[in-house]
Length: 347
Picture 1 (tube, rainbow, N blue to C red):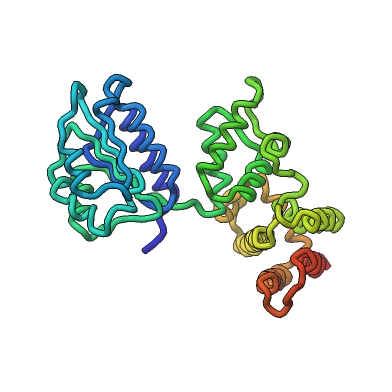
Picture 2 (tube, rainbow, N blue to C red):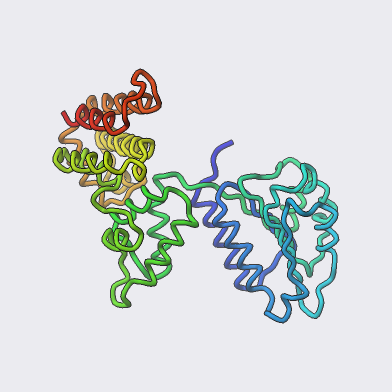
């Protein structure tokens, strides 16, 4: 099965939230999949906003999958609300329910109580779409299936998130944050929200300096900076960074460095191929999943590294990735392997 497209997940998530804000409620919400951020946000909104404070005491119930079963969930959902228009039943960690529990609820899904909002939260798991339970929820309720972002989608997601808050982020700062945190959206949002509060009212732009000062990610010694130094042919900066890594190995794992370098040279190869086909810059940036701001870096790198050389560098990266895992170089420190690798790439 093809991977869910991130833009489709985001569109569905935003549609559900917009409906909730308009007080358009459904009797069953099935929130499932790889990305917990969207699952948490929707379940939290329902828990916090559908009922007022006086109604919550008798009409909001939070259950956990490992501590409940199908019968208990149905019993809770089938009760009428007490002095409120709705009652809420949220089953967190519903992936921990018994193997057939959700299937056993199919009779309730077929005829849910309209005054109950039942929310099933399954993280890192989905239910069988061929089963009757899924089909009944699809008819009567709302289903959101989530997926992790690809690495090349994180910068754009970060930029869009801040734009909706009335802020911006420099492309280099977004790249540093993505390299450091990866695709964990909850962590990204947590860090962005902290930075947003610290920004002055007259300049809501996050820079690399903000990240270095408030999150502790060095703008000079992160993996993005190493890749930039190597791509630009700046031997001095590249050596300065890998010497820093050698002194701080625990903060700079080899696997993270290798994956970042591999991603950047893979993008360089793709850039060169797209350029040869006559693709326009905007299309190239979209294909690479980067801001057009960075295209100049790849243009300059292409003058230094031919397509043939880039292919050989990618082969080198694969070789040294294996060596870092003990193949053909037992006991060699990662710092020495990295120095050797960078020397071979740049010379």
